[in-house]
Length: 216
Image (cartoon, rainbow, N blue to C red; front, top):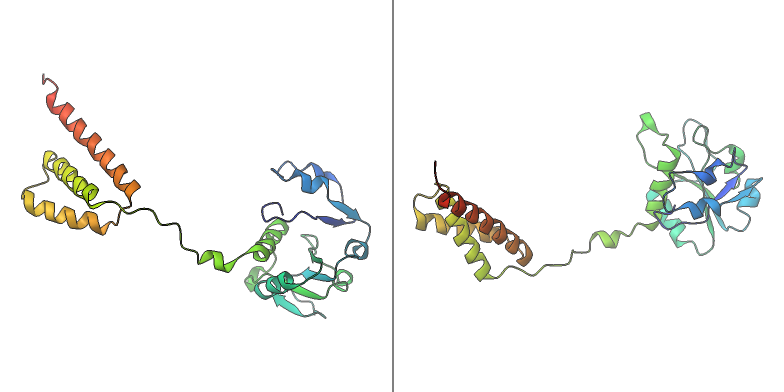
């Protein structure tokens, strides 16, 4: 709940209150401390104008409209008043009596052979769908400043020197042309070009230090 910005946790006749001391609730202890307990579901959702139950459906017949999470999430977000998303116990889910309080039911699309999900995972998937913004996924990342031609030429020269000292270069001018085209196809930004220049300078310095050291 804390991950996705939800804070109003309500529990109906919880089996025990040890959840308030859950050690795994990193940075979200306040949600557990402020969680409200109710003896009945009717009291827990009394102030809500939309109650949506969650179910894996299973084999029982349902008397409510059943919507997939994608559509259900959009409908919940459009609702103007307070809405409650209802989860049952991990073992049994919601009872028929629980569902009678719901306006409609929601299901996470899972494969038939394994329709039931862990309770915590189910909550996370549903809450993510409620805050998900499809437009944000289409946003282009901030563009970085492209590397200057002078830096790319310097990079070409240093790489050619390193390859020459490593014994790779045989036809120097032909190799430089290939390197120049290769480096430009990499479409480096200014920061990455500086990183490459720094690495090649270090490599050349090592070559130079090795050649200057006295041989035994």
